[in-house]
Image (cartoon, rainbow over all chains, first blue to last red; front, side, top):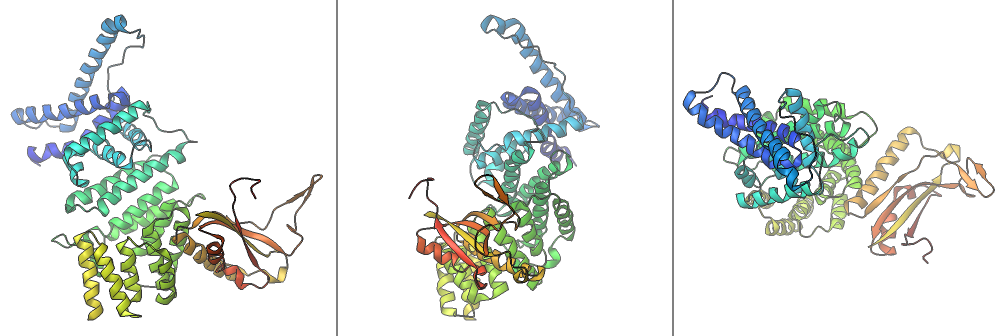
Length: 410
Length: 118
């Protein structure tokens, strides 16, 4: 790796670690200082390495520069507290210890704690994802803007407001205790899953960026699985679910970026290693008596890694959707359940159930009705698909529906 | 939208009408398909099946193991659903698969906001 590639690479892997450790040390009030010091560290690296060449151990070099900068900052703060501020405010807090602990253990702990700090329902979901990408994943503002199809200014504002809100709430950077862990894990898992979906279903045409979002979500979830305190069944279920989905990553898009529907994917491109990882975590999730929505979704995702149409597969999927909808309704789940119902009980019965859903602003609803009527009443099928086409927003969706209309008349 | 309680009653006492484990599995699938259909319309609020064991408490601290009512049918489960009126609630409830069983019943009652509301 030459220097031009090395610094961006290290930025991606080390920036977040330095920020997490420093922020843990300063408290959330100091999050911007932590980010500034981490950024300055990389600036110093690119200036120095350009002249002297890359040091033998670049990571250790970065840590030592970050430590020095943090020490200088804390010493200035101490001086201010000792000499200046007593005359202004009555501040008697002890002076800061100025040494920074960048050991692997502390890096890991700090990142986990930061996860619980950022994934806070008090700030909007979009902001949680944005902050996660910035602070936990080391994404640049431009990359976050690309992922959200937004611009740098909007993202900067969003992150600024979110940080301010967390400061207002005086959120502590810490791991929740054993009694609170299940409850506090919920928003963390929700954010990780949103981050994954942002990549998996993104409208962004940038395939590399999309894949990176998914991998980052899986990395964060893996950190939770690797810590005894946070290694809970729903965490394993979520990781299993993401592994199963990610197994199809290379089969979902053609070389020129056109989406390939599940039915048309080349099974040879499915990642068998990822599928067996998913199975491993699903097994690990099957302890205790907690049945989270991640368990159910992982169960569905498991069946989707097997392409053959068997009765067992569709009955399994139908029952998972029945349970999932009782925990949490979503139009997508309602539509997919009806599709599974058609596979188990036939199209006629599924049409009756589908027409009760009345999701009349959803193009997938009409696409489903089109699919169900095909072969029973092709004219009705066509009408539904035409409505789906009129409602569809993305080019990929429109193309997929057009294809099915063509197939009807073939 | 109003909320309605759907109470499912069946005979949990007479020994020779109790389902075998295999039958039970089939019944549970039918039941889940029915509830899943309601949930797919976003009209499921909550509720669950009940264990067959329990206690009945009467005045003067009289506690018995049941029967839970003076009739053969005990409450086997309940769910709460959303519907715009009683008619819609009845329509959702009448496809409940326990009604395939002779003597079983499903009761639909609107949930009122307060304890003493009429």
